[in-house]
Amino acid sequence: MKSSLAALAASAKQQTSMLKKITKAQGVTVAEWQLLIQLQAGHDTQEKLATIMQLDTSTLSRQLASLVKKDCLSKQAVGRDRRQLIYSVTPTGEQAVSAINQAYADYETVVFDKWPQDEQNLLRILLNRLNKSIDRSLES
Image (cartoon, rainbow, N blue to C red; front, side, top):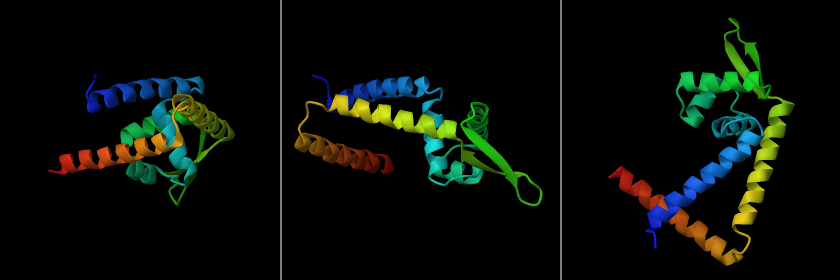
């Protein structure tokens, strides 16, 4: 039997693989999907996005340019010098996020299909506790 952390790592690898497959079907990467979600939440400038997503400017610029090229985002120059850009999610981007969210929810339903609700709740509690323990270990 695998140790708890080894089993968790194996599960995370499988989940990541499925998430990549789901996002790829919509023509975006996992990082781009997460970026679209933050844009939908109202973080509409590079500065806000860099802060909330903890990304450096060059990485963020590449992801934003890719999403604009894929017609998932539009950008508008604002300010006196027109150098600041405001990004907004296009209908294509909205559709991609919606489809990915639905496919991911469907995947989660399949994974936990045979799990009673009390066991799902217990797993959430234990994973949150594990997360806090890992955070504490990293602080020391």
